[in-house]
Image: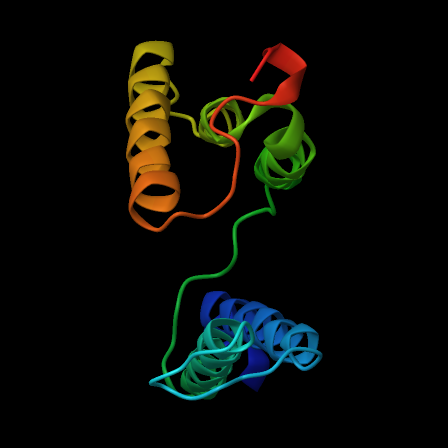
Length: 153
C-alpha cells in the first residue's frame, strides 16, 4: 500500500477543498476586498476561499498520517444532478424569480440522494424559498425579483 493510499478520502477531499478555495480567491481578485468593518464584494469569497484552502491542506496532510477507508466508486450521475441544479438556478433566477429558482435547485439537487422523497423535497424547497425571499429580498433589500418576468412578475 503506497503512502498516498493511507486515507484516499481525506486526500481527495483536501485536494477538492484546496482547488475550490484557490478558485474563489482567484476570481475575487478583480473586486475590492475592503476590510472587516467595510467589506467589499471580494471580502467574503476571499475569506471563505482562504479557509477552504487551509482546511484542504490540513486534510491532505492528515491523509498521510491517518489510515482510512478506500474510496467507493465516484457517483458521477449524482454529481451531475447537483451541478445541473446549480446551472438551472443561474439560468432561472432572472426569468422565473428567486422563489421558483430556489424550488428548482432544491428539488433537482435532492433528487441525487438515495433517500429522495417528493413530499420531503417539496416541503424543504418551499421552506427554503420562503425564508430566502424574506432574508435576501425583504430584510437585506437585494434587488432580485421574487417572481420573474417569464411568469408575469
